Amino acid sequence: MKYVIAIIQPHKLDEVMGALEKAEIPLMTVSNVLGRGRQKGVTEVYRGAKEAGSLLKKVKLEIAVNEEFLDRAIDAVTKSARTGEVGDGKIFVLDLYDVMRIRTGERGSSAIG
Amino acid sequence: MNTGDTAWVLVSTVLVFAMTIPGLAFFYGGLVRRKNVLSILMQCFIIMCVISLQWVLFGYSLSFGPDTGQGIIGSLKWAGLNYVGGQPNADYAATIPHSVFMIFQCMFAVITPALMIGAFAERMKFSAFLVFTILWATFVYDPLAHWVWGTGGWMRNLGGLDFAGGIVVHASSGISALVLCVLLGKRLGYRKTPFRPHNLPFTVLGGALLWFGWFGFNAGSALAANDLAANAFVTTHIATAAAGLTWALIEWQQHGKPTILGTVTGAVAGLVAITPACGFVNPMNAIFIGIIVAFVCYLAVAVIKAKLGYDDALDAFGVHGVGGIWGTIAVGLFAEKAVNSAGANGLFFGGSQLWPQLIMAVAAPLFAGVMTFIIYKLVDAVMCARVKEKDETIGLDLTQQSEAAYTVIE
Image 1: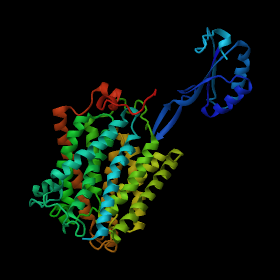
Image 2 (image 1 turned 180 degrees about the vertical axis):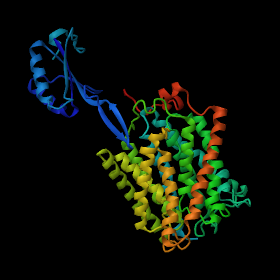
Image 3 (image 1 turned 30 degrees about the vertical axis):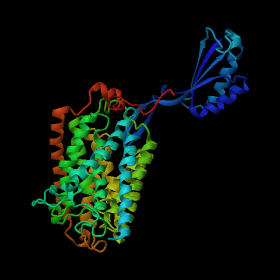
Image 4 (image 1 turned 60 degrees about the vertical axis):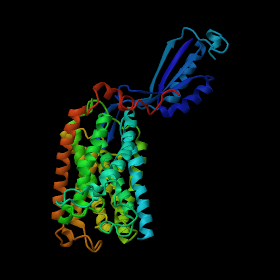
C-alpha cells in the first residue's frame, strides 16, 4: 500500500478529481495549504508597499492506494495537474504501513477502498 | 423651526453614526492581522459609548457652550445638556431643535478619536487607549471644535472656514495619530516580516460605508435641507470619485496593477479633502481637489512613510492628516461666494481666504500634536501605553479582550 501526497495548483483541483475518478480512484482527502518552491512565492503590493516572499496557495490531495493503482493514480494527477508553468506542484509517494476502517474494524488492503 | 431641516439633520446624524460603527470599524478591522481584528472593532465600538457620554456630560458645552472670553474654550454652562433642548439655537442652527444640533455634533466628536486607531493599531493597551481617548476628546477635540465652530472661537473670528471638519476632525486626528505612532514605536517585526491585511473585503465594505455615511457628514453640515446641502452632497461625491480613480491610475502606472485597497484608500482621501471645502466650492473644482489629494496622500503613504520609517499602521496620518490639511488649504484656493454667500473667495476667485486657511492649517495641527504628546506621556507614565511584547505577539484579541474572531475548528 502507498500513500500519495500531491501538491497542486488550486485551480486544477476539479480537473485532477475528474482524472482520478476516471482512473477509478474516487477516494481522497483534500486540504488548502500554503507553500513555496523554487520561485519563492509571490509579491503583493499594499498601498504601494511591497510584501515579498509570501507563500502561495496550493491544494494538497492525500490518496491511499493499493500497489496496482499507484501508477494509474500518479499518471492521472500528473497529466491533469500539469500546465507546464513553474508552480505546478509535486507528488510524494510514501509506503503505507496499515489502514483501518473505523466503522467495521477491517484492516489492510481491503480497508483502503 | 423647520420640519424638513430637522428631518434631514436627524437622518444625517444616523449616517455619521454609521461611519464609525460599522464603517470605520470594518475599514480598519480588515486591514489588521486576524489576531487583532476584534481589538479594532472593540475600540471603535467603545469610543461610540464613551465619547457619547463625555459629549452630553460636558464635551458639548466645552465645544459649543458660551465662550469664556478668550475664544479658547466654551464654558460649562451647557454641561449635562442644560439649556440644550427643543428650542433652536440661532447661533448654530436656527431651524432645528438645539438638541438635534447637539446629537449631530456628537457623532463628529465620536469619529474623530476613532480615526486615530489606525495609527496605534495592533499594539496599544486597551485601558491606556481608553484613558487616552477621553483625555484627547476633552483637551484636543473640544477646544479645537470651539476654536473653529464655536461662537466666539478665535479661528472662527479670524474668518477661517471648515465646512464639515477638515481641520477639526481630520487634520487634528491625523497629526495626533502621527505623534502617537512615533511615541508608541513600531509594531514588532515591522518591515521585517510581512504585514498583510487579513480581510480586504471587510475593508472595502467599511470604506463603502464611509462614503455612504459621509453624505450625512458633509451635506448634513449645512444643517438644513437646502441648496447648500445639495452642493455639499454633489461636491463630496465628485471629489471622492475623482480621488478613487486617480489613486487606481497612480498604482497602475507605478506597480502595473490597480488594487482595490488603493482605490478605496483614494476614495477615503477624497472624502477627507472635500470635507472642509464641500460647502464652499463648485463641483468642477471638487474634481481638482480629489485628483490632487490622491497624489499627495499616495506620496505620504507609499513614499514618505517608507522613507521615514514610522509605523502609521493603517495610514491614519497619511490619509486623514495629509488629506485634511490639503482640503483646508484648498478652501483658500477654490472657495467662491457664488457657491456660498456666507463663505469667501479663495485665491483663484480674487479673494484672500488663503491666509486664514493657512493659519488654521498650521495652528490646529501644532496644537493637536503638542497636546497629544503631553497626554500620551502622562498616560504612558501612569499605566504604560503599549502592550507587553508577549501580548503583542499573541494578538490583542486574546490578550486585551479574551476573545477570538475566527474559530479554526467548529
